[in-house]
Structure formats: structure tokens, C-alpha cells
Length: 295
Image 1 (cartoon, helix red, strand yellow):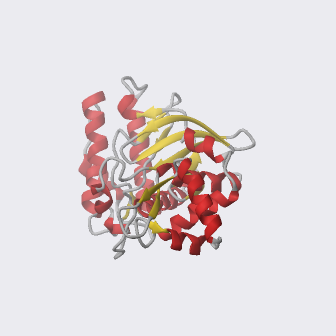
Image 2 (cartoon, one colour; image 1 turned 30 degrees about the vertical axis):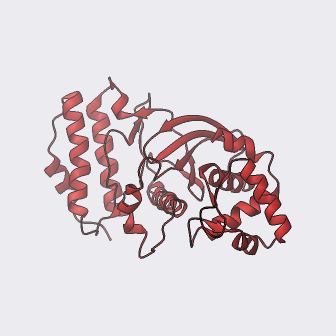
Image 3 (tube, one colour; image 1 turned 45 degrees about the vertical axis):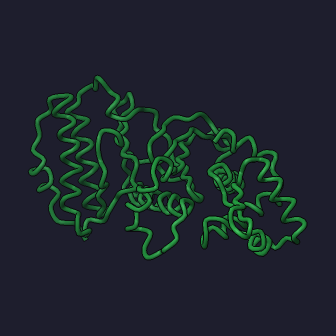
């Protein structure tokens, strides 16, 4: 990301247009032919070739000459640049900060806007370690036969951004969604760390109850189930504020697997607090207390 941010400052609008032309072409195929890039960019062939050579030299695209027609595809840096450019142009962010979190599916950076407000920038990287994860996300790919990694990560970011908006309306300690473009989400930033990395918690029973209360409110009012809740996606700060993050796997409460998912979410939280802080609880009773969804 730091490399993408550095390259972006020296790019010309024509370079960005060529990258966007390749992005459009990748909806149909992994590699986009030069003729199609020329068509999507609306540039003369001479300008198209010049810009392709330029962005290729910058390391933003990958060239494939193994077939009868030469084709190009975006790499992760090229896609990062397109998303960053859009967020900067909208004045959502003005400065990129350090890497503050790295997972199998995403990276999280600190960032600032032009007013000095600090946010978190989440960048989806599904497919980084294994393309199998993409196949597991067919539930929101629909019947689309060609699913590029760009498209999958874009859908993932949109799904989480939409979820954050629904939960934030409940005025809970959930990240405030600030902006989103392609595979990137800008959200409010809470200084803290995941529960898994806390060896000591002041009044763990109180923290446990806060978590259960939030999950219950989200279940009843937003009709949402996190679907992947555990100690690695609940953040705790030094003032005992909690923040439920990573909403990619969320499902509505009328989902066919809703019961098993809410049982797993609550079970994960109860098991963690039992093992680490010896907090006794009854997962079944907790779930029963959720009652029926309010219409």
C-alpha cells in the first residue's frame, strides 16, 4: 500500500484511465487484449500503447503474451491505486498511515483526512493465500461464471460496508462507515486490540455482558447475525469499550442457517470467557433470551 500511495502521486490521469479500461475488460476475462483496452479507454492506438508501456513499467499490470493476442491484467498494486485515487478525489482520505492489522482476508491501515481526523482503512485481499476462499463466497457471487479476484474483493467490501451502516444506526460501538470504493472501506478507528491478545481484562464479566447485549440488540433490531464472531473480531480498548468488527460473513436472522450460526457465535464468546477468565454462562439460555425478531 505504501508503494501504491507513492506511485499514485506521480501518475497522470491518462495512466489512470488505462488502468480503468483494463478493470472494465476484466469483467469478461482475466486478461484484456490491447484492442479492447483501446476501446474501453477511447484512446487512439498510439496513446494506448504508450500508456500501457508506462503503467507496465511502473509495475501496475501483468502482461500475457502466451496466446495469439497480447493481453494485460491488473495486479494488486494497480487495483489499490484505482481505489486510493477515488477515495482521495472524494476527500475521504488525504494521507495513508502505517499497517495496523493483517489477516488472511484483509489488511488494515491507519489513515487521515485533510482535517486531521484519523480513520481505519480496510483493504480486502481475498484470494491472497488461496483462491478456494473465492469459491466459498459463491453465496453473494450469484450465477456469475467468471469471478475475478477484483470482483470478489469488491463485493466483500460492499457487503461489509452495508452491514456497518445497518449496525451503526443502532448507535452501538461498531465502526462508523465513512466511505468505500472497490475493495477498500474507510471507517472510524478505535484504539484497542482484539480480545484474543488481552492477557488481563478489568472486570471481564462486565465486558462479556456488554458483548452479549450488543449481539442481542443487533439480532433483534437489525435482524443480523455476525456469523463469524469470536475473540479475533471483538476489539477492546483501555476504557473497556468494545467494537465488533469483520462483518463479511453476516446473514439475516431469517437465513436457513440462522440458528446454527447464532449458536456458534454465542458459543464462541462463552467458551472464550470460560477458558480465559473463568466466566460461567449458559449459551442456550442467552439465545433463548433473544426471543423472536421484532418487526
